[in-house]
Image (cartoon, rainbow, N blue to C red; front, side, top):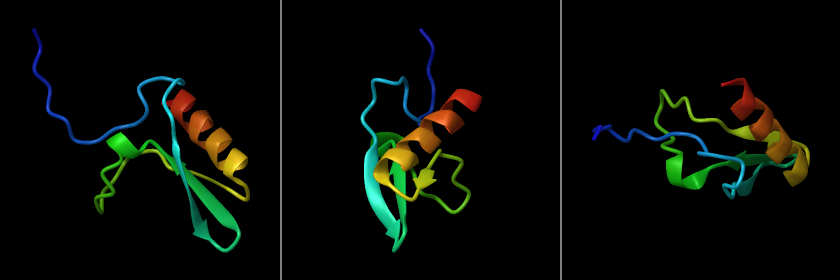
Length: 66
């Protein structure tokens, strides 16, 4: 058995449901809400785009890079 400390994180797989919010007047953000810590030094992925769909695409592109 391995013990790990939970300090936030990104979606575990592409089946995860992302939370989508309006970030500003012309921008949406997508994030994996259960893992998003939002701390000042946060390294959690947040996707941004002009539409909710674009924000989700940006999130998954970043997720695949990690």
